[in-house]
Image 1 (cartoon, helix red, strand yellow):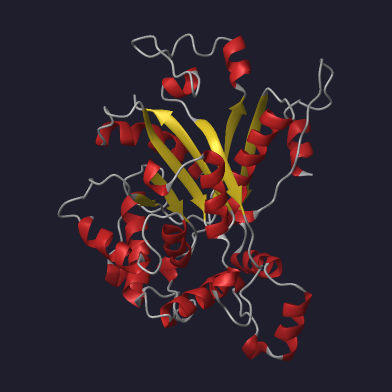
Image 2 (cartoon, rainbow, N blue to C red):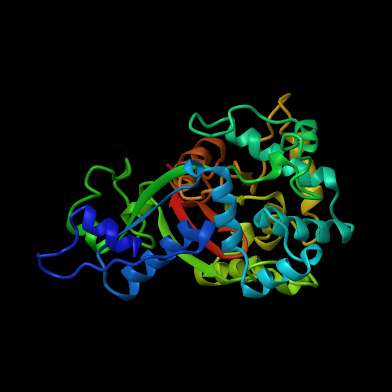
Length: 366
């Protein structure tokens, strides 16, 4: 009922004007921002809503560590896991459950022989290098590979067998809001009058907002995986491939059509899986891709070429505050660093929360 509470506090409810106000609470964990965008797009398209505000936030950093761990563990265990913890703790998901769950998947991936422990750690290095560029990021200094591989939690050692402290999601308090509106609503109220292109021409296919550098949701995909790793991990537990395929199909795009990817998650193994699921690199080559990017982005010289590149963002506990930054970078970074004269619509960009949601949008190069 969080949505009802917020709508009441800001004065949307009770609604005394014409029409109706609809509020909904969505809880898909870290995939919430993309879930919210997809639901907003559906409300505009299928329910004839003129404008939908996607509002989210959390305050996990304010919680005392013991309380936070207890809540996180409770959210990642069902009754069967709880009984297993009591009767056979060695074969259950240890506390803290979240990093141990991801760690089991990381260990499985390492056993497949297509990924090294160093390549897994390089993901966190890439994330820190990107985060250090943003003035509001939690991470203000890029980590070295040695920093990641040696990071520990006080005297307690590693967080999990294949997961060190700097590879874990960071707890953060934050919130964000974004409005998804119908093009008719935007036209009716004249929101485009001050943002027309210099030549005064708009894109007939995508509408005036896309023609002026704005963003239009072209499509999205959803898929779900298990709450925690099964006893025998295999490819059937992963869902990012299905979500990406659905998003590509709905948007009528192929991986090579996208020139900017926003791929990140709270643990390195998720980013590696997303690289392959979204077609940035072929199956089984994500580790090698990350290692190549690790050396190309060494401080001696940042590599910024190539028609497609993925962004390893800072691994926040809360994904929501990243959404406005993703939108800003998708529109401005590429217009400065890529040449798109040969294509009118540029670039298409994708945002993926691995395993659950993918969404694609497109904008005109400014």
